[in-house]
Length: 237
Ligand SMILES: CC(=O)[C@@H](O)[C@H](O)COP(=O)(O)O
Ligand SMILES: NCC(=O)COP(=O)(O)O
Image (cartoon, rainbow, N blue to C red; front, top):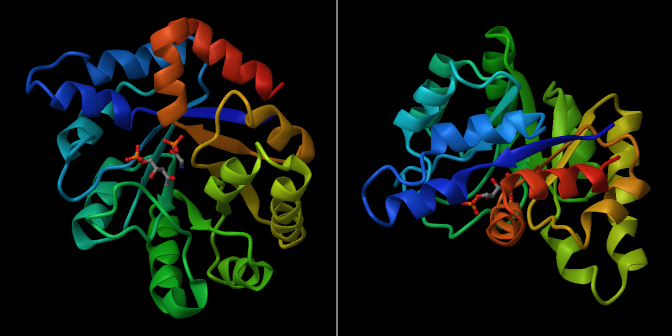
């Protein structure tokens, strides 16, 4: 079974628009769990334009499922993760001014730093995941860092899916097979939604986890959070 981790960044974006505490991201995270989400994902960025570092500390004692912190490993991020000790840290190579994540790591270029980070987090009992595209050699190098998992960057899949889903999924099946053969767990995320998720999951049945934020929070406007989480979990069953 593939776990659903709900990324609550967008909930914080709405809260931050008015400066108060509505919606309450802590309450929403707990609601997601009680409605069946198997994890909560946050992606704090240096400008704290959505999830704030203080939210991450406040969430930690409340999250009863898997807590996944994603982000670019600047010193402040590494310090945050080591203090909070989530279940999983996902290392993402996005620039501070990126609107959203737009690529996976080039592991060859960043191999030494990624290996060092994996070692540090592993020593502290935190599962590690490295955000990557579908290049097979890059996944071999990711495995050599000692990471537990990779997260496949699924934006190219989501973009191509409406025109040709067989072509869209092919490189992701190959990448996930490569990861599996190297003993890596496989996560996936970015732009997954109610249209494209079931097909992705059916074609990669050994997928461990998807983290979904933008589309899921938008769908919750129409269906409500409880029904939306059920609809996403139905895609993963
Ligand atoms: C790594 C990844 O794909 C997601 O964490 C994505 O970056 C979500 O962040 P936003 O909600 O800020 O777009
Ligand atoms: N890791 C991907 C994630 O957390 C959510 O991405 P998106 O669904 O907001 O595109």
